Length: 489
Image (cartoon, rainbow, N blue to C red; front, side):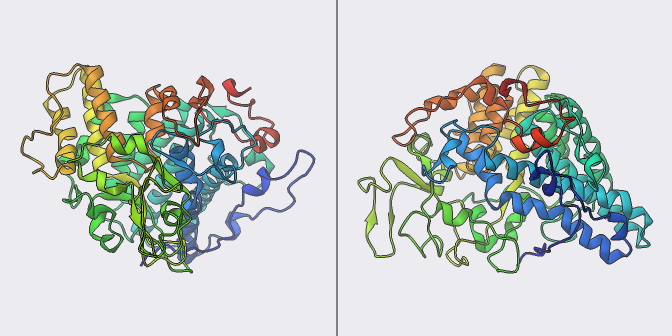
């Protein structure tokens, strides 16, 4: 059972600003200093900081980066086709939902950080709660930075129009704030999470490694990743990669799932519809109680896996439906597609499954280290090879610390080694929202134009798609913003 509840916390609702027109004026804001009086208020406040993450990943948090990349696609319905078809613009509703959830989480973190020192409570708990708020603010800004680039930096809770307006800050300044927040988080967070789904020291280190990778600070990305690899505590790779996605082994899998969005099938807790989206049509209740059949893997991606790679079993090209009929590639509902088995919950509550959505995994940290270590030294060394090969050995069922025939070739130059690591990231982290960002941060995103199928025969990706456009509502209401992202103007 999940422990972060779906409370409705009446803190700053920054989304109200983004939905108003230029002529409208917000007339009522909640004042955080009216709320933060007791330790219980602080605990409700930190719950409100985490809350928008669940709302973000109910759908758009995984839809935006996955649909636009080259691993999976949605059925061409209800506007989701705008992402793989590259027909979206600044008015696209998914962008607004993504942006507002991130800034709501940031505003709630700012409210807590501004008011918590005035609350009489246990000093250690206060320090740890502040560290959680710094971690979550860093995480929300990381989401904004990797999607939109230059964005406004807000360090005050939104209690009026003044705090809601501000200019875009260069993305390098955004990363500087992220890393400063994570220094505090790493210093003051506990070694193990106080509750399931809460931030802890290892999560702060892992996120710092990833943020430095995206910020192209290779030495620091390598150092932070190796800090966790060399002193993992209870963290590490799960032995069987298929077990990592077994919903009944969720607690055991926290060994590898360093930080995830906590979801539950219980109606009183936070839920996600990803299970229903992935479950192929007519399959309920085999994979999920409700099967929308709304998204699939590109068949080319499925066939790119080595047949001995145990990660390949997390997709399939046929299934037996609820009526006992085998549905294969001759069926028009599955032809030219593979369905995905990473998010399966036969005991789901309708579309809502128990499966958590991973944000940081130990395998990711190993691959960050491999890439950053090679880039920092302008060539791959033994440590870089060992990190990527540990991930590959697990994938092929080999002992982690013993050289294997599945290790990547030695004596690669830097370019070929980085490409090998990026390919490994694609295999290991598929459908987890990383692929598009790996392509954009390495300036390889134009290659998704070649990943087509009958539903998306043309994918006209352009240079401007390096960043998503800032939502039109923000451009219209934030008069200090300085305009749209340049390539979208």
